Image (cartoon, rainbow, N blue to C red; front, side, top):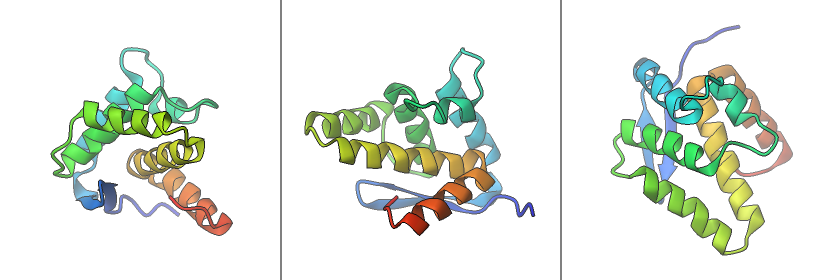
Length: 128
């Protein structure tokens, strides 16, 4: 059953930012543009690639969502945060960060898919 959009809360540096359900369509377009660029690929296809989305595109999309929700953050800050995780050599931390960002973006651009992934992750006991 289709329920529609719900508020989505994003976290950045320990602070929560909420995108209200009734203000998500413009944000969806911004996220899709950031993920797809001029490739013409669907944003969902980019997010579901086996190797994941390019980190620069993921950073730009997540930053767009954070900015839309009121965070004062740049694309570069989000990208450098991902790169810092990589430099620490913690593959698990990078995987967790990237998966969390992907699920958050999916929760905005495709609420049914995002909810399904969040439910699946919760049932396996993994953090998002």
